[in-house]
Image 1 (tube, rainbow, N blue to C red):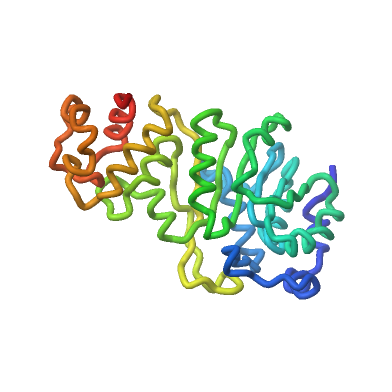
Image 2: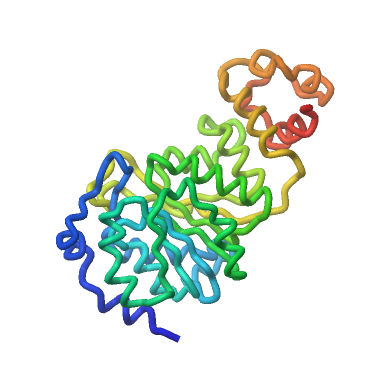
Length: 287
């Protein structure tokens, strides 16, 4: 099998790739490039993080990366020897910058030029018949809709063995927040219903080029058994509850009060005080 690590290590420095291709991070695309291979290698080592192994070995896996940019994280994923890496990139400049790397490693790396929010990763993963991971430094401006789409995939088919994703620190806190926390909301309920979620580590702005104005964090997601409920109904009830999060649920969930009362949920609570199980029970009863 091709020695991916040796091929990747022989590639020119990222800054040289960026300079030669004229690739500059664009704010409109939510781009902030990770340049330090020690950091990108650390991200990949946190694959299998829930197993406590942190081996960074991706042998046998199909890996998806979203928004590879000049390829810093791409290189680290390839060093971990996946069976195949599919990188999805919207920016044509970045697609062009990645071509020498793709030519060097061959069909172990596939680059899709397109909008990640319109890609059906579930369908792509099914064509390869391999366990699948998503590892990505997500563009800030589409991170939440991408995550919501992948959660819907997990609800319907559980195609991903693991997701290791970078978000703005505030978004990471919203995903992993416990009940009662100020960050606890709709995203926490949906994510923690379907997945085990934890923040693996934080990254300071200086780790990126250009440095963003906010901190970032890596969140590790692993599938778990979950109580049955319809995804769209859980979205509906959490949107209503947290859309007026400072109000008691007798107001924010006024349309569902007969169900709230039948379930014995105290109507003077606020949405942030409800357990995930409470929201699931509500979704199960909605017509």
